[in-house]
Image 1 (cartoon, helix red, strand yellow):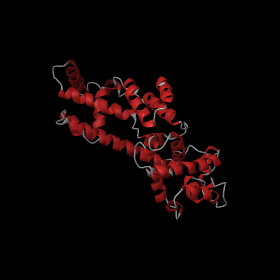
Image 2 (spheres, one colour):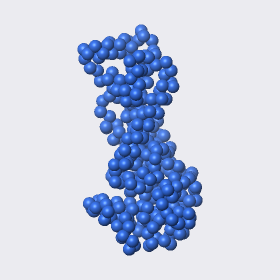
Image 3 (cartoon, one colour):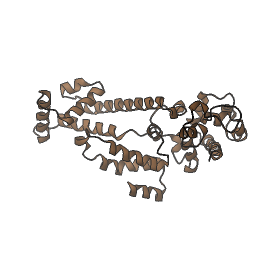
Amino acid sequence: MHLLLKRIRYLNLPLDLQLKVFDHTIVPILLYGSEVWGFENTDIVEKLHNEFLRKITSLRKSTPLYMLHAELGRYSLKLNIKLRMLNYWFSLLNGRQGKLAFFVYRILLNGTQSGLYKHKWIDYNKNILLSVGRNDIWIAQHVEHPNCFKALISNILKGQELQSLQTQMGRSSKGLSYRIFKHEISFESYLIVHLLPEVYYTPILKFRTSNHKLPIEKGRWENIDHSERKCTLCQSQQLGDEFHYLFECSTLDLPRRTYLPSFYTRNPNTHKFSILFNNTNNKLLMNLSKFISVILKTFP
């Protein structure tokens, strides 16, 4: 992975291509044989995955994983492992019954069903199907249309992961602004280089993921009560968060009028906040980046 990172920097690859290269070179090594050992603790695999994401984005270690994954459109490798295990299970069921693997599987299955012993691999596959509400498939030990069923299971597992991410976001005080404009796990279009060069997408990425020193974030480091993290630039006594500096702080009126269309500066609200951060207009994104750079430089 470190060799890959070195090559990435040398070739100056765009973010989406960096992720694709990781998926085609590192993930196959990480998950080799996971169809068999995937029921074990996979934290070290996830740790390496998350380390790579932080390296290519240069985001702080304190950046919540839900932000990292949602912004880059990344699902956990544990989800990949579950799908690999189920795929292997499907291949056992639909393969030749004379194969040694199928023979061993039937012995293990009969042993667990009769209560003679427990087998982690058997139980894990069963629990995956239970978690997606398809215990009937396990009982039948038969899948009529494997490809369709694989796609269905994949969508359900992704939906569960999205739900988990949204739950984490809802419980996190750091995600108060983030959850206004981010609602799914998808690679953000502003990170695509041909739409916005790295020098412009980096300020937006840092601002979106709270990698800044605004009072709302700095107050967290200093254990200041959330309601007391007030703006230090104007006399409004408003919370010094992302929304305030983008739309309200009077000290930033001039750059705000310079870079943001009047639609956003007139009667600002969370809906406009969401529209602004989800737009794909190249010129608007570039101006947004310039304005955010001004804000970030105000709080070095």
